[in-house]
Image (tube, rainbow, N blue to C red):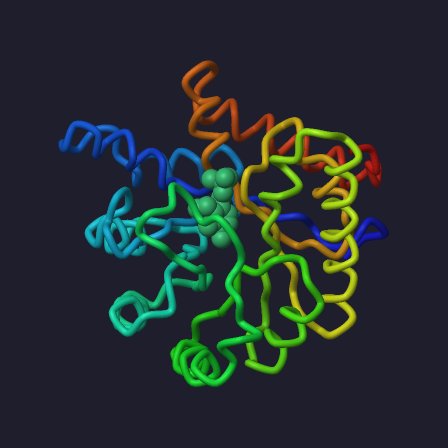
Length: 253
Ligand code: PXP
C-alpha cells in the first residue's frame, strides 16, 4: 500500500473476443491468444464469463485459459449448481458471482445478495473451501456490502454501469459518489473492493482514483478500441490512464 492506496490491478475481460469468433462459428479470433497478449501488455489478471447459454466464452476456453495463463484467472459465473461444478473442476484463482438473465445483452445490474443470503452462504463456502477467492458483483449499496460480509465473501465488485452510462454530468456525479461511498464502506468492513462494467478511457479516471479499489475489470471497451489501435496498445493506454488517475488522486468526473 502506498499513500495513494494499494496498487490498482487491471483485469482484462476477453468475452468479446469470443463474441467475434462465435459470429462465424470458427476458431478465430482466439480469446486465449488475446489473454496471453493482454498479459504481455500489462494485464494483471484475465476475466472470462461462462454464461449459461455459452454465447461467448465456451467450456473449452475456460479449460485452455486455466492451462495456459500464468496470471490469475477470474471466472465470472452465475450461482448455479452447473457453474459450481465447473469452478470446482478448473479451480480458477477467483470466481465472481454475477446475476444472469438469458434475455439481457450484458450483466445489467448487480446481484441481489441481500435477498439470497441463505442460498449463497453454502455456495460461497464450497468455493472458498476449494481455495477459490470469491467475489460478488453488486450495486454500490451498503446493504449489499453488509450481506457480502455476512455471507463470507472476501471480495466485492461494484457495478459501475450506471455511472458509465449516465448522460448528464450531474447524474454521473451522483453515481460516482455512490461508488466512492461504497468503496470506502467496503474497506471499513474488511472487504477487498473491485469495480467494473462499461469503463472506458473517458470514465476510468475517477474510479481508478478511489484509493480503496484494488482492481478494475474491463472488457468491451478494450476489445472495441483494439480494432483501431490493437489490443496491446489499448491495454497499455488503459494501464497508463489508471496509474495516472491513481497517482494524481483524480477527482474529476
Ligand atoms: N465485471 C463484471 C462482473 C462483468 O460482468 C463485466 C461484463 O462481463 C465486466 C466487469 C466488464 O464489463 P465491460 O465489458 O463493460 O468492460
